[in-house]
Length: 201
Image (cartoon, rainbow, N blue to C red; front, side, top):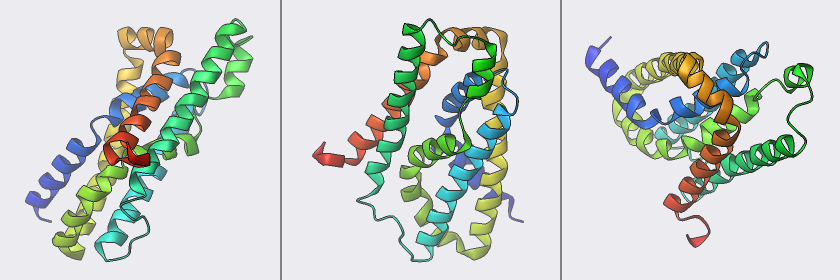
């Protein structure tokens, strides 16, 4: 296996996914203390990234499932989830917060499909970067990129959980996470829409 390609794949992944660590930390903190929540976040991250990878590989082989004109509208996914989270935070604040710990456990933090949707939408612009790289790497090189990317998804999940469980960060996220998560998701959604020129923006 060519170490040069592995290094390039690791660098490409890091550069195109650096913002995911903050989003992952917010997701992990949202489900803190809820059994199975971390597993759902990891599953969602893998589902979302696998979908991104599948679209990029297919496009590198000439199949276009998502026309370039559609990519900016992926911003609607995190925007909708951010607005939903903001509505929930406002309702909890108005009602004095979750009634008890049992309500929190039933809530269970973010579901895998929510995490997958945000991961896919946030990485939609990455497809444009991955496709030409994959197309020139050949089948063998593409396989190396895919394996390295999938290994690094686990590293990213570990890093997000690590930051979410540091005492200082955990306290800040416990206090402000219900506000930060909607704001970050809404900002990500608006950024994707504006940068892609969706709706003539």
